[in-house]
Amino acid sequence: MAKFQKQGSEAGNGLPMVPVMLALATVVIWSGNTIVSKAAIDVIHPASIAFYRWVIAFLVLMPFVLRSAWNEREVTLRYAPKLAFLGLMGMVAYQSLAYEAAKTTTAVNMGVLIGLIPLVSAFLAALIANERLTTARILGGIVSFVGLLYLTARGDMATLTSGGVHVGDGLMLVAVFSSALYGVLLKRWRIPISTWLQLWWQIGAAVMILLPFWMMSEKSPLTAVNLPLVLYAALPTSLLGPFMWMIAVRELGAARSSMFFNLFPVLVAVLAMILLGERLESFHYIGGGFALAGVLIGLRQPTGRLVAGT
Image (cartoon, rainbow, N blue to C red; front, side):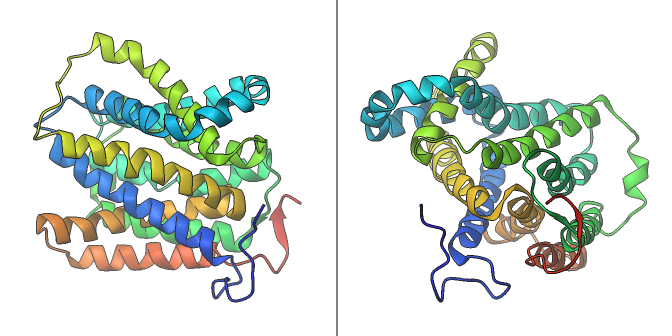
């Protein structure tokens, strides 16, 4: 298995360049999906796009992995419960819970809680996957979190306490935990089948889990208007993004990979400016600067005393 550590392939801090770029590209793709989700609100029901995207991704990938799936069926069956659980955590739980949370909590609260993913990932990785919990990683998470608080609050920190506590906040906490746990278990379990095949089975599990919810929900047909949005959600977001993320987690570890989540709101703001004509305000630059600084700190290779782990 390639470790992406050939001469000249490392980033300035000693990290392998390829998985770093894959993690960054994944977050860019997923940030673009946020713009797609905004555009899709008026043209397709959320339950429909959530279901269609995974069905399309499953069918598109099928011809390329079907032979491998048959040849490796015995190994796959042994790991079927783990693959199904990964599908639940990575493809269903976070997005479904975030959608439900949005009904009863504020965007500010959601943004703040999403900013906890890297810190939760770091602690779970230390507990479950024996990843080293370094001072730099904790400090980077805190610096980024402060930046995201400022960005989410749009420069007015008083708004963080004005919204109150809602049921949706609890749902978002569970969503954050599921997202962090997915990355940690990808690293911890190291299922011995190809990355594409793992992804296909996880997507298949997601389709089966979402099917009854889709059947009970209001259904939207595919149209010329919403099809491009569904295809973006299905192909780059649901196929290419998870594939690159799985490689990044495998090579960088769950905690270090999760640091890239701190760039998510920054990239969404930039894409909104480019694609939707929205203006970037001073709080975008200040909060985004802190978020980026935290990521750079957290990505540093451990050189000193460890806080926890081995």
